[in-house]
Image (tube, rainbow over all chains, first blue to last red; front, side):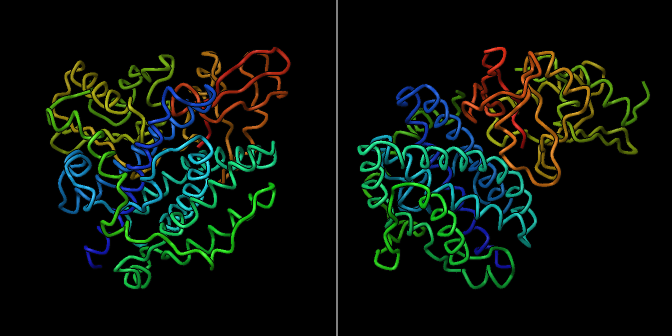
Length: 251
Length: 161
């Protein structure tokens, strides 16, 4: 199997989790209610742990150590989808993004747990159980708030419309897509997207929200190969602030 | 002490979860095995409960310290996902200790975990199943928060995974 293809896959998984993990951590101390503060903080911790697991696999393939990879690259070297780097906005936007993202992430992990590349399969088997709780959290709140007050529904609908083009960007195919599919390493982005659509539809149908026909939306692509919004670099600068002052600091 | 797998695991019984001091890492299922080479080198295998658990590094060091305290200096402690942890790996003794500590033990499940079982977790104080889940995220990654409608107390559960 082409090692570059495996690395490409690992980088996108790791970077998505790291960047959304960081965004989630920005809710610490600011959640609308205590339980949500704790929920987003816990998911931050989980996701950064997940990124560490994937960066560790990359290190085993000859890449630099996880801290160096996480803290020393510039935005144009990151492989995350643009969806995860967008600022948190208000709670409605963070919740919608969390819903759209984690429903895709769990499918990736479910499919990767069957991967012919054993190191990824082992990690994915473990992580899919953890992401289950993230999906449960997102779906519960979307169902509750998506059929509650007029303001809540309007806010969620506006955020959903805003996030969808970026959410479709999550499924930007890899340069090695066919190769990964043929080697049974990964089922591929089209397969993930089809299953994702079914699952988010099933939740949205239970609310007063409407899902725009995805065929009419232009996906925001480019994130997988270093094209990012102006929001990523400031996030990286903040995340790496301590590391850049003293790479040996422990905190 | 003769270096055998059983003896190593028995002495590691004294290493407890730093946040649940009644629960040993062996009973938690985080220590997955021990091997002794012909040359007497001891390898202890561990696996994290949750990948992002910040206590894992501490636990690994605690295992190393305990081995050394018992005179075993030739050792390697490996943390890996080779035998991934799930909550069914908590021993019966571990479950009993969790309950005594006031944490509802995770229910055992067959093959596939359906999170619906979180809805009516048995209260560790009064054994009632008339409980509601308040949030799947608690004070640590491995705990969820629940409310008992009978004894009217909040309680935590060690999450099934």
